[in-house]
Length: 287
Image (tube, rainbow, N blue to C red; front, side, top):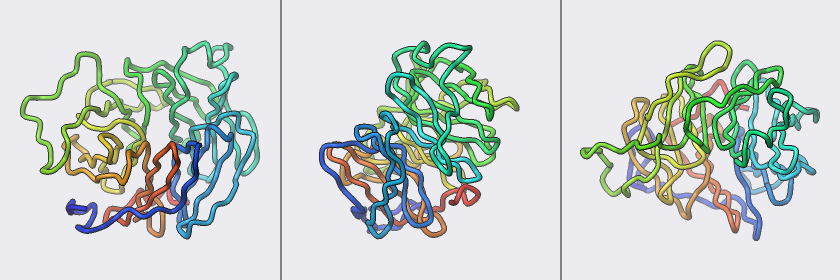
């Protein structure tokens, strides 16, 4: 690693925590001692410890590939098979949302339930060919904006939602500042303003890098996978640096003691990586 001030020290390296052949994993959620991941192909949820120990958390998730955790520690999975739905899996299993306006979520289009993030009220944002919100009662709202989206994350104050993608016809400025040694980015992040009822307004292009899973640190910096690594983006959308991946990573999350570990997920074959950081994940979300 080349140092990124306040983020990561020079010389740090990714280490492999766990690997599996012929299967996928996605949507990491960091904890003090490891990371949760959903395995779409095997319809199960694992917890991979910092020591490499693997715990089977849930089975029969019907191709559940997206995870979210609420402030009180409830774990949810987004199921991608027929009868798409969001289910609570911990501490008990129960249906959270599977319809919009009385119709199955399949009626929203062909998009896969890519990713989810929970807010502090118990609601859930998700991308599924567009951006939607399920309020704490499981009522689905949206589509918001025009971006299709994939990875998404809330700001620390939950006033802004960031979604990977570029708006139609959006082009980076000719003088885009790319950190030395970083590739030319080909993705982006779109931002929305979060309203009191969870709805989203003011869709706008926020940054010119980012492609899939996205995390945020306690100082508001964003970490979004793309270009076979992870982009580090300032709270104002500037590109601060690039953390090369040992392989192409699809998603990242902060966890570990004091949330100073960045977890990365690569698929087909699956590998879960970790790297030590100076930056710290949002403490209020530490579980």
